Amino acid sequence: MYKSAWYAAGQGDYYSSLLMAEASKSIRLKYLGEENDLTLRSMAITALTYRNQGRWTEAEELFVKVIETSRAVLGAEHPDTLTSMANLASTYMNQGRWTEAEELDMKVMETRRTVLGAEHPDTLTSMANLASTYRNQGRWKEAEELSVTVMETRRTVLGAEHPDTLTSMANLASIFWNQGRWKEAEELFVKVMETSRIVLGAEHPSTLTSIGNLASTYRNQGRWKEAEELEVKVMETRRTVLGAEHPDTLTSMGNLASIFWNQGRWTEAEELFVKVMETSRTVLGAEHPSTLTSMANLASIFWNQGQWTEAEELEVKVMETRRIVLGAEHPSTLTSMANLASTYWNQTPVDRSRRAGYEGDGDKKDSTWGRASRYADQHGQPCINI
Image (cartoon, rainbow, N blue to C red):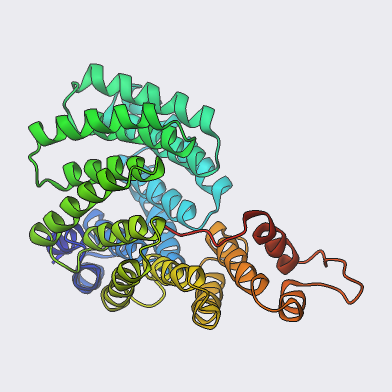
């Protein structure tokens, strides 16, 4: 059951993964005890499955328990202890708790460097995780410096065609992408895609991800035809290889819908976004971050067609759920609030003043709603959540 839980997670079947992970955990707790290393591993895969479902609180509680027990039984520098710490850091990162994530990532990286060496694969993974935390905070220079170091070291130690080296190249390309450095991003993504296709095969998940990344680079340059051709290919291959309900397939559908969205092809975009939302709700759950993203994307379609009521209903639901699940200050929650403020702003002056947080004398209140309205005022349209 433990091994099958890992397999199911890899297939994107988080429901089955959790059932088997929890069963494995319960049996091992009963017969082996909480401090057995096999029990700890069952607890860890259960926590990982919680994280995959966006159940951050449960994931955090279980990861903390695994870390504390592992530290006591195996030691603070044991690989399993450090892996659990890295997993907890990723849980913090998904909640926008950057400081806590960074502190843990730094600690794991430094410990692995001391115990395993600067060139060990686990050390390099820790550096890549820390770079990802920097990237999510917009600390591009620090993220780029670490990513370059990881990429060059992996190329030397593992070889230019190793999957980990290719992942490093893709991570560096994504940093360029986020800064609008399209040419540099495109060159790296093309190199990753071509090498991955040769080494791993045309239908390998990593190859398809690299193709999707290249498509997103074309999309951001307004190269719609090239972006669409690539994204259709990725979507159809994932549907065949992974299944229609796999999270990666849904991601491809959402990306293709965003290409339609950017061209004003509202009907095609709406059909895909509705399908993604409904499938995501069934497979991942109503509160999963991916489900909420698909709802927000559908709301943006309504917004662009002036269907304010439909847009507002979805945006309110997304905002309220994100506030409960992620917290009031999470970047995704704030994006939802800004989107909702923008929807109010485009309706009647009376409604938008009341809802966006205005006082009777016309001055904006220094409230979250006021800040969100100012954001919407500056941007003029909702932020699509691709």
